[in-house]
Each structure stands twice: as C-alpha cells, then as structure tokens.
Length: 244
Image (cartoon, rainbow, N blue to C red; front, side, top):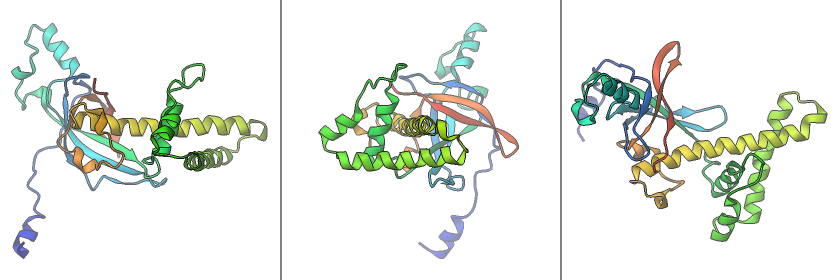
C-alpha cells in the first residue's frame, strides 16, 4: 500500500448527523429489528475490574413494535416493507455494549454461573451445568474448585470492603458469591444470544472464543432506551432478546 493510501485512510467521510434511535422494542424472537453497523474501537475499553467493554453502533431495520402498533391504530399499514429506510421509524442509531472478562470465558465459569442461574425461587438447581461439563470432559473437579475459590475471593473482598458486621459475614459472602455468578450468566447469556442471531439460530455454534468483531452485520431483536452519556442523552440497547 502506498504512503498516499495510508494518509487517505485517516479521512473521515461519515458526515451524517448523529440522531438517537427512538426507544422501544425492535423485532421479535423470530424476526430481527436491529442491525450492528460497526464496532466502535474508541469506546471499547477495559474497566477497573479488567473486563473489556465492547461497544457497537446499531440501527433499526424496521419500526419498533410500539411504532407498528401506533401505525395500525392510526389506520396506516404496518408492513415493514411500506416504510423506507429513511423514514422517521428508522431514523437514528443506538449504542450496544457487551462486557466480557477472560475469566468469565472459561468453561468452569460458565458451568458455575448457569448452574447458579437455574435455581428456582426455592433455591433448587434446575439444570446442573457443572455435571454436564464434567461428563463432557470440558472441566475437572479440580478446575471447578479453583474457579469457585476465585469467585468466593471476589465476593469476600467486596463484603469486607463494605464493612459488613462479623455476624453477617458468612451469609453476605454467600449472597455476594451468587450475585457474582449471576452477573456472569447475564453477560455470557447476552454474548450467546447475539451469536445465536449471527448463526441463524443454530445454538450448537456457540463459542466462548467467538470474536466480538465478527458480530458486525448481525441482525437481532432487542429493546432500546434513552440514557444519559456524559451529560448528553442518547439511545442504548438495554436488552438483547433471545432467538426462538
């Protein structure tokens, strides 16, 4: 590549005005309503815990459910094909963030987290992912125990930092330990949901080593809300819906 071409690559050609996408639910469990346009490198960074916060730019591919419902109630056609991409229903973009940590992306963490997330209101485990991983040979009892100790230490450190009274220490550590694992299940669950949309619903293709960069171009369904960003309001995808 010539020196001139390298210089040209730094020229910003996107002069479109940044407009926030309207809040609402876009798409369904079967039909996408949002599309990842780009990976935003400048906004993707490590947080204090060492987790990587990946940022994406998202646009709508059809009106939100609320907009479709309003169009129907007003006597207008609600077919997505009747709305050109430059219509108000599609105007604007939103941000999507996905936080991942290398330790969460270990089979042991996934096994512990989703076993914990399967507990019912009585606290009983409904799906023993630890057992499934052991049977599959992706983890060992020793590696699972090492992972438990890791999250127990995180929980203990947070409980101590909160100046928890000694008599409540043990119970608080257990509660915090479960919170840590539930947080992992939420983050990895979002990662898997996006992969499901990317792979046409084929859950057998879920991969902990899947590159977030490859999600660009993926269409999915989700919820958009207006949030504050550094004193300015903007749209953010606050939930990714699972694909049926």
